[in-house]
Image (cartoon, rainbow, N blue to C red; front, side, top):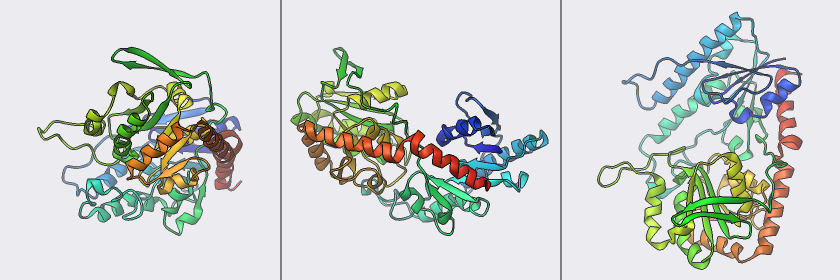
Length: 414
């Protein structure tokens, strides 16, 4: 079978699926703009994008125009692939950037499956969730309707969808929602596991500090430190935590850019700011800053060691896409305090696989973290249950990958 993957930053969510299909003997080709290093058995085809949105484009349409430009670039690359003799039986695409919009104009008989990551809502999800940043702008519903148009253009052409969580799948409208299979991308629970010998080294004003499981370490992980992932609420909880736990250290992983939502506002002087500094400065005078360690973005191996030494791990999010890092923390056996928001309720059961707190209640977040720091037996129980749940529901080799492969074969009709 000829299988074409489409992802702007391949492999993305297809990191394990594409090479697994290649190992089965299928011909696997991947279209991309910025791929990671080559993987065995997968042929990479880069498509250059030329052109940009026009300056006079209506603001609600600008994003769709950008997707159309990328779709045209992928269509032209597909024509060249067709002329070179390649015809896919199956196309597996992340449609989020528009590259898969026109591929069936080239290969009309190819069956398409799309990755259903997030269908925007005017109510009940991320938009308008956090009142601190004001109500949605006037016309936001119109903007979201156009933002969703990309997915809606795919629905008539796709035979199936794939979504990592039931909540994310539930956001998609019928009749396409009935064609979505819920299968997570998968977690390497055999590799992401507790390790009593793990240590990390952090730079402090007085030198390098080594931390391990014998130390009290509270951890927080975002791709970027920003409100969508509750960074502001975590920072507001820190003064109480550090007062109650005088030996605790806090390790925060994350960059200073914006992954989701709006950029940080300019300062009163008109200078650029980061969300990290805005909320750090809000509580800086109440912190022993020598015990708060911002380590930025780190190599994956370092990230895992941070989880392995974690005494309590905090994870907060708007009602939005569930982060891999939450499930990786579960696999590592972390005792987790998480926000009681829709994406979390599939993985965190109160008192079983972690503890849930109101996203907006920084005091409750602090109290739950302090309580777990005081209770090693409860931490061990929650961590063991979290790991068992991750193995049972999100393990890559035993659960997710076999189902993903079955999904592709089903898409092909085989």
